[in-house]
Amino acid sequence: MRISEFSIPTKIEFGIDSLARLGHFVKDLGGRAILISDNVMRETGILNTVENILRSKGIIPILYDGIFPGADSSIIDEVTLIARKSRANVAIGVGSSRVCNIAKITAFLCENNGDIIDYIHGREGNGKHIAYIEIPAVFREVYALSGSAFLTDAYDQTNKVISPEGLGTDILIVDPAIMSEIPLDTAVYIALDILALSIEGYISLKVNPLVEPILLRGIELVYYNLSKYVKNPHDVGIREQICTAGLFIAISNIVTGFGIAFSLSMGMNGKNRISKPVSSSILLPYIIDYNLNVVASRFAKIARVMGRDINNLEETQAALKAIEGIKEFKDSLGIKLKKSLKELGLKKDDLAEAAEVAVRFEDINSIPRRASFENLMEILEKAY
Image 1 (cartoon, rainbow, N blue to C red):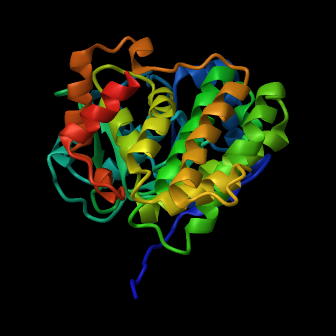
Image 2 (tube, rainbow, N blue to C red):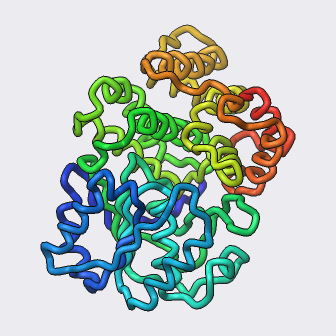
């Protein structure tokens, strides 16, 4: 019998208006905070809300809101220098996945010597970080509960994952109420990315009975709520349902890792700066097809969750209903979605580079059908 072992030391505050408790947390953790974000959060008003909550507790944070879309590792040393000089004892990351990962790494570097390049090249951590509070402004942050973070290496512009001892999140605040300003197409792609991550997590070689139910539930939450969200994006209750699926991904990742869609999307996001959720949504049907014969029984269960009639069908035919269900689901949203990688402005040469990056990700080994560089290229060319 296989033994499963994992832990979630992070305190999770989830739900509508959970952000209101931020000031209380920061005060308990030391009160000298650096707030790390970007200009988008200022424009949406989220940053103002966070600052007002902190000020209500007498906390005036040091603000760094200069993280730009596609920022690479060079900015991490800049943010860390400010945090170190100000002697911050709490770091708060507010915004996109990139912002949150940069903030998380900054909290780690504040208690560790050296620059980010040292840890990209394998330097070990001392097991410490200043208190870190993460506030995602989108439906999911995949590394929120893990001891890992992603960054774009300034040297070669490829995405990499680092996991030095001591990297982690103390408090995760997921408040659907602050996510009302996400552009509709962005929100839809992020929800589809949650669907892809849930499906690949469910078929992972590392999946166990503890996370299987929440992954299936995550698939169900996206499948039955995303069309409602498209019709009424300001319904905070619907946003909460999709955020629940996003939280399930963060929890299950500790066990399952990710898979092909994630690894290839990370590969395309580096030099090409292609949106990870967009490329992931395009790749999903091809990845299901690639793994279909190996784990047909699992895809059949996913098809059943999607409401497909699989009675009296043999296992492989039932599994094919999952692909059918995803295609029809995406078409039913009423949003014009990208259908091929070519539409993203990628060239054929870019595909090989993405596959070369993806094959180096550890998560690529968690899929039921092992994927070589040639296998990844075959998937990419079909999606192109």
